[in-house]
Amino acid sequence: MANMAGNENAVLNRAIIMFRKPARRWVLLAAVATIIVVQLTVLLRTSPDKLAGYAETVHKYKPEIHGNAGLLNALYNQRLPPQESGRKKCSEIMIPKSYWTTTAASTPAFVTIPDVGHINVDDTVCIRVVVPARKQRVHMAYTPFPNTPWDSVLLDLVGQRTGVSVPVHLQPVMDIRNTFRDESHVYEADVRLRDVDEYRAEGYVEFRDALWNCDGELAPADYIPEPLHIPSALRVDVVDPQKTSAYDLERYMELPLCTDLDVEGRWVSIDALPFNTDLVPPPDDHGRVWLPYTCRLQRIKYNEFMQCLKRQYPLMHWFGDSNLRRVLKKLTTRGDWCGTSDEHQTRPCICEDYKEEFTPFNATYRELIIDFDETGGQMLTDKDADFLHVPDNQTRIYFHKWEGLSSKNKPVWHNSFEESVTGRFGIPAVAMISLTNWDAAFDTRAHFALELERLFDIVKQEYPPTTELIIRTGQYFCCRSDYDPPDTRAFSRLRNAYFDQYVVAAFQEQFGHTHKVRVWNVASISEHRPWSYRNETTDCNANHARSEIVEIENQVLFNAMCN
Image 1 (cartoon, helix red, strand yellow):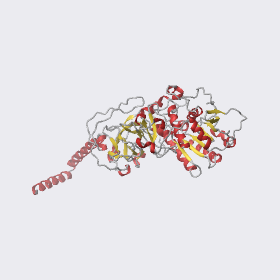
Image 2 (cartoon, helix red, strand yellow):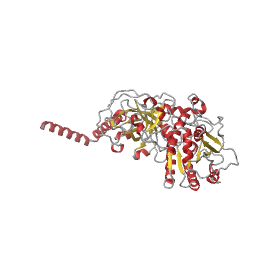
Image 3 (cartoon, helix red, strand yellow):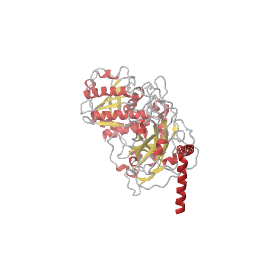
Image 4 (cartoon, one colour):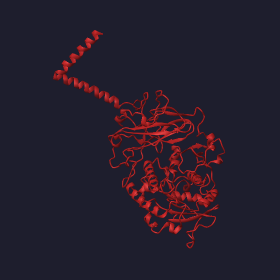
């Protein structure tokens, strides 16, 4: 041991002597620099598996994307290291420094589940996505809204047995580096899982550099999805060892009836239901039923809904676009519009119904008054009719068709309110307001905010606290950009979602203390559909929900208003 210590000291002394000589000093510095460069090169070329903490296997990355909207099909077959059971929130799990130093030149964007393993029903799991810095092809004109991400990442956790799809709502990690355009970005979300199954991540990067937000005069960016590196062994097993889950389908009929318009749920195969399928809303065209987790939807017939309206909501005011028009087509025909599976495949039922002949009302009118009874609804055409009083044994909907608060309204939307709406048509039990679809497509967020303030003033003037306010979200949008001339729409999944969030938060802040405010969240219903079904809207520039989805959205409304 003494000899070893002496040898080490001798080597150290020789190194010090050599370093004191200028020529040799530069040789040593060059050698050290070379070693550092080599180590950095190795680090930057480290695979996503090592960066994410997984055992690395040799693989060849294939960046091709197959399919119309580009689902990533090049998955990897890595083995995950064993993990201790016990759930942690994302905020409790350290982010490796290596995530911030990756570059797109050496590492693709990747998904990681840092606390992977099995969880119990109703637990959350932390999901992270790292989008490495890309120094080239940076688009400087596009910017995100405040406190929103640079990158748009579409990600779902998909049950391998049930097909249940759970959207992952990623948020930027609270780190200064996430605010810079040309840095690596780290996103995370705590995702709650309620159905027993094995879940795997599926998704891709839709846009970088805030290309998802074509605000103002900016043109929609090309939709060229970028693959996410998702190890095939990256999975979460949700277990119910005691068989006590409140979300088990065997216990669904024990749940209380739904009375809320915004309830989280999932799409379940009708073949998996252990009860009479007539007791729940009808399935979509793929044989899947929308079932909330914490309450029970019952199938309510249209004549039953009309009886309910007559008792509780004899007069309603609806403000919305063509999506509400499609709802009214269902109501006025007691569900017969697009009521058969064969009709579901026709163009008006799939997408565009504007030019369709429809006798109960004229779809081109800006204002409609429709009176309903158990047999259906009909537009009021008598100009001498009493617009202030609803006939006995009927219910009435005043429908104001608008293109949101956008400049596409001709004349401008607020001109219609120069004469009091309630003064002309009475004070309703419910005022339903639908926005986002046209606003996100054709308006800037800044101008929309000003118009929304103008709308708030009108609502305060027209509707007393006894009038319930129902805010209907825009339709869910994904999987494409719109290039339909001449009115190219600025749609994107994130842009539409942030418009919805802004509208809902603003209405709740303005009226939550004076009125009953409820949110009819139709976007969430479609967002939870399997990706391939969501992708069916890519050939519908208007982004209308298909008629069978309109029926399911209506059932949510019927239950919330009448249970």
